[in-house]
Length: 559
Image (cartoon, rainbow, N blue to C red; front, side, top):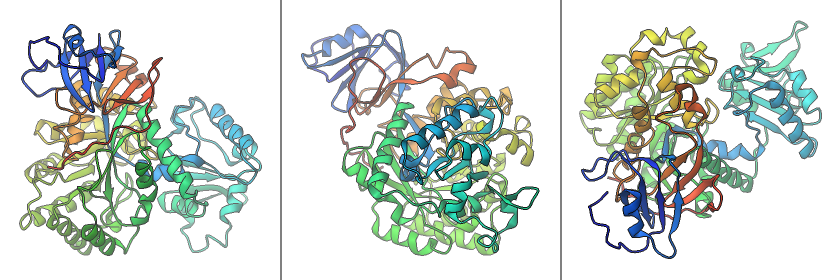
């Protein structure tokens, strides 16, 4: 509460009462948990008891009795690939919620009956074979049976892809067409025929680039739809990490969606070049022509990354080039960002990649200190304690995602037993280094925030593997903070987002179950029943609550 007075405060736009509201407040007058919040315009003006909130009620006030439900600040995915997903969303089927391969294949068959023959059907990540009771993914023959007249492309994370027979014909998958490519990237049957299965990121790109792109209108519609799906999951904000091939021409759809008022999540963009060899020219042009404070509370450029130099972009099992020449190029690019005072979020999974990045940052900081620029390592799964300490000395942060949720076996096989190692995200938190949680969705992982937080709290992956020892798990409050106010730090908005106290933006989520008391194994089952952005509902499963696709625009100043 702001004070003890209950005098008439004037009509509020929205009041939520009889709730268990986690405020994460840092002011002296707002309790950690309150019963009610009052919203006027796009801001919270009161947080306290339900009785005191009554003083703000006016003739036009919307009133929600939460009936004891848990309310938390709006969730912020600090590293996701929403913009890229919007390009193809209207041509996709999502398997993330399917529990059996039989049902997943039925969804392909159902879509095939809706579409004209020859229309592409795509499943582009966000699922894993371990989620199916069958314990496996589809075969090309099964895709043929489900959609005999449609080209189908299935992508499993960044590990493999699968084309059905019609799809293989459409992309020209023949021995002659791939003669100059790595033969290890393609699967053959016992007779030496191509099966339609592709292995690894380069081959996934090879296939995907041969699939017709949707029109710009479809991309805009897809971007609006994917942002609504994120709101449905309880997200009120994202930091978009771009993605492979996401160069200057890739942002038309998200900007047009924003101009039409159809974004449902606050979107912060990290810009990078479109491919190898273009880094210096395209990043130089971004720095020359793009203002990172341009836009409004719904859409704004936040900085550069996550790909800074393509040759130095590693993977969970793939090493990056961090040799002497590459290290010099990294330094030159980081220096460009620092000179213009841009934020940088840099992808680094492997320990040697993180070392090369930190070395370059330390060198840059001697001339252009980066302490106040909110630079961050993205992923950092293999960082050791010494690397974490270097991160802290630079004033940088860590953006980490639950890659083990889908990829536990791969990580353990190629790295080590994570339960026996000090987790970099917890080591960073103990040193007061900001840590933001996110998904790395929508291809490499689920975008569901409660599945992600579940892994950080329980250490249990989707296949039931325990990949994090009890000593290294986060508490529920630590995980929530890293998905809210600490995530907001990476876009300079921790004073306005991620808390529920007077003066902050009215971004919050009413949950289906109490995040703090539900059984640990049920955290991932939590859903949003109401997502509110700037005082307006962007998702609702509550009767009588109207969802507004055009949240109020606000200006959030960059520090």
